[in-house]
Image (tube, rainbow, N blue to C red; front, side, top):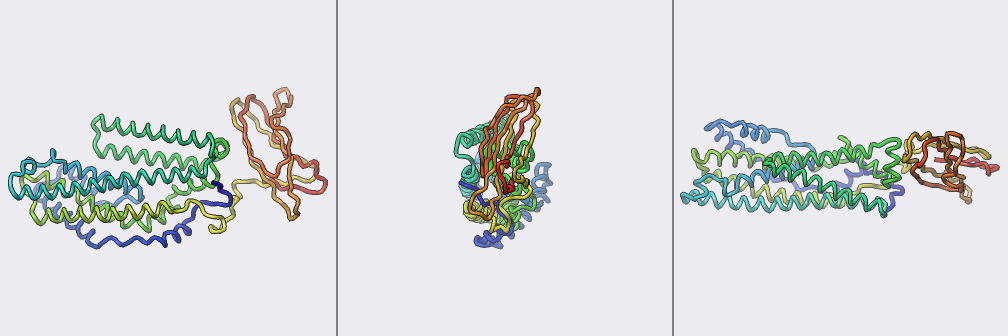
Length: 418
């Protein structure tokens, strides 16, 4: 797919796009349920002081959720797994495992129902994250070269993901906790983001390699650079949809805190009917609303544009800071000499001519030659006249390489070369 005339998405354009996707409000009961669970947790703490682990849980539940949408999605996934760990039948208090009383049996039935709903929601979230990652990658790949380079990029991604999964497996096999595993998963996610930011912010020779050898279009480099900016386009997404997600994050944290405290103290104080009803209602509403949010945000993501036309962005599609303008008078040449100290270096070029008002297309001669230390010349790229050209090669000798733009054949017309 061509990127001609495209620029990265802007905040203003993205805001107009999001206007088409208003998020239905989260029910007021979500906040009330989270507050009720926090109050029940406080009552349990008053009867039996927090352990260090419980103190950490309480601080997290009372804190401010992460700002990034994807970080919150990972946090919700982590909390669901932590809750399912608590709900595992083998880890419940003995009285609940044995269903010692009718009251215990009713509580077990409620916990089983909560477990089922959370398992279903966790599976949906895992599928959502996988699908979203694939959609982003496949969209990016449509703008990449459809040749061996694209194949290499796909193979590299597969190897990278296998290596990342091996790291996760190693944490699990060594006895790492759920928190340890998710800390690694988020670190891996941030590593991917840092790599993208470095790629998008590349300059000089490295930028040339990325653009011409790997085949990454400049507009894609611009996109992945700005998408990571604190005040970039994604901040519009956070402002628009973040508050609802933050509310759900607070609720699942409150559920985990209360469930942990109530099960840990079950021998001292059984869960009352009203209290278990609050817990069940919280899980039901949480899974329903989080499911709705995931479906909604998935539709927003899959249709969201990466790039827009320069006219829509109100910008020139050719960035002035990416190209230098050189005037080559009639009858003259323009030369660039590059000093190469080592073999297997790469030299790349990209130029085009500004066309005039005449119907005849203007062109410019171009060739590349190698100059040895003894000043002998070897033609690397034969002379030819171009309206525009991109190219590169790997050097086989150290020394000087001269790139020559030739307008000596023109009697009247100067040439403006970008």
